[in-house]
Image (tube, rainbow, N blue to C red; front, side):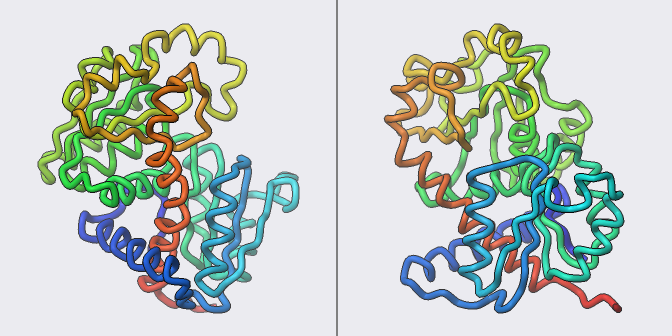
Length: 310
């Protein structure tokens, strides 16, 4: 059974197959050709962390593929009342055809997948956000960037970790700039550097954003205060002083550089109002592409599933 828990679980060819499927299905959707790739299938969507884009994109996506989505918040199911993750997996995976989970610890989704009889998709954990980075790569290709030089500026969080996995698998250049006390998880960094030896990816780390952005053709960032970190807000704002992506920083990038943000964006913190609005078309194309990238992933997983005995 293939699950989509982290990009590191896939080969370069498999990741590009998903992107190609996403492109194909997006083109069909734009032509109003809704091919029922997942006809009559049900996607269970478990949310321990709320989200605008994740819910709308997955629920709309499964519907456009001919299926139906079930929204399950932790308040709606026994998981929120103390039922073990493994038992929830054993029950729900006997009733639906695929599961998407948006939760906290990566270990939770991995335990669910271990006991699931159907494919499981990571809609976000504290460690990784793989569907978002597949979305970003689809957007980069659509905007005509064939050889990405990506500069990530900000927190060494799940977005940064997923960029590390994608770059190390596909073999493009990635520069990560984070404050010293907010660097990426070292185990994840080590894994990425091992993959990079095979793919030829160039991965570098900086404490100074200007060094990372200079000459890059893709600049990206994320919120400094993720969900669950609200009590650290003032401390984080001080630590990230100088990490705002503003006009002065963007001037150091390639003159045709694009700017991406997975949203929600907090103007005046990780990105300036001027940069955000100047690149709004790119950012909201990226937001739309969550729908299409995730459809590509779901269809790919369905075509690679194996029947499991009841």
